[in-house]
Length: 138
Image (tube, rainbow, N blue to C red; front, side, top):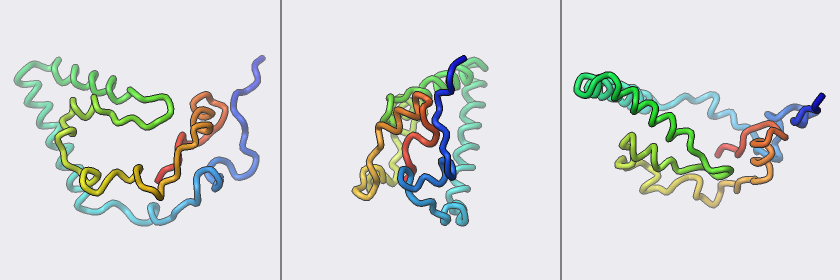
């Protein structure tokens, strides 16, 4: 019989591992998203549903299904340890043309205050030797 490939955390589990993942912030649990952001996301979802209906009426019902399959394939593409830019998915969905805050305020992951990735821990999580997120959130 095989031995388990995971290392059990003895004290507190993964959530309390402050040395690897930093201190837990409570602000994100208390404050919800901005009302304008929720309205933007619902409008975006409605616009996407309308686009699917137009494609189904124009090209047949197989076209939206093919686009969903392509989206699933492109969303699974990842580099082994580093976060992927998802360029193919952005080109397919049309978000490549959007001008977001990271285009003029820089990407938060490029900031000097963000801790670098712990590649050893990321590989341990990928191989099933350790638990927890691959990289700490910022």
